[in-house]
Length: 488
Image 1: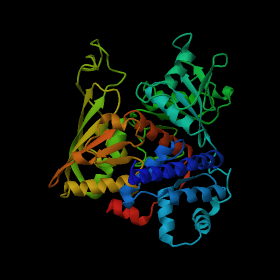
Image 2 (image 1 turned 120 degrees about the vertical axis):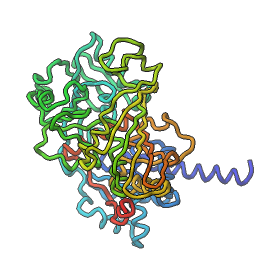
Image 3 (image 1 turned 180 degrees about the vertical axis):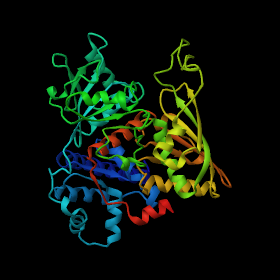
């Protein structure tokens, strides 16, 4: 081994050791104080040392240099000593702010930064909300994984409601939670109690309730009260049908994981979640495609203006299609999903206007179902109000993905090698593929990848948090200068 290669390996080992030392600090802050740590939106909880090192490299996209572990590690140590209340902390932004402040004392800086959150461990801004999953299909199980991962902080998964499919139904439900052909194995342990109809997953005790009637369940009999019921069956999509849930004892509000009909508010988190009021007993989280394209369309409209356009979605097949040719009430959907590209309709283009009224009548849309199990793409073919180059559009969307109020919804990539499977498990609503962008004068074509299962489920959980009022305060706040850069 050469001296140079030996030095490189030694440096790597030192960085890996420092990342390993961060893991118990990150875990303790979360378990004891409900402090969620991240680096430019990439959460560090339950991550390996390698994942933590990769997260530190993300800072290059903004600061043109990796976040040094020699800066982030002392921050974690100091945060651990402050005995903070529930907060969300971006270590990269916090390190940058401390660096630019010129403050000599890290402790004094952090004490001033966090104010009344210092020494407030155990004092939550709101009581954790009970959550019930009505249905346990693709979205229901991913919602369960995300809620279990959070360990009951803010949102407590208390029950799932399903129709009994077999005598060994409980074991089968638990097995589907444990193993997933697309998203991989459940990270943790699962125990089934058939006598009490419960699933214990990483310490989260989930009551399994068998029912065919959403209006007749007594949730209070299981110690569940004022619950938010997340209906992911898609069986009812209007106010009348979903109101059945409110007739059950122990239910306070209902969230639909599909486009809502009639006067239901269709919420795309990050865009119009502020429209949710305490009086809204039933809301919709819209569709996966609507969640993917609306934040990008809002960003583009804010900067360049959108006169009109067409949205074409290349969408993975879903459970409502046939594996082989057979009768289906929908046009073309009876043909084999795994053998064909299938042209079908999408309401996502029109649904954008429910979250962004200024888009009413501006968009048309169509969809092509393709033989992949997850991750889809939306192609936004737009006529803008002002001229823009490819570089101008890409740089603006890249900044929006990093520093704007939409940074939890929009991601950005400029890799020439990425394909759909690279975005399985993405927590963003959509990922702009900068290399595919086309722009000429006032015409632009923007390509947006999205994990139509997991990315959408993350958006649903954000809506649940908004309904429950359990969002932890973020530190440091996105600076006005950063917002101006993203929205200029």
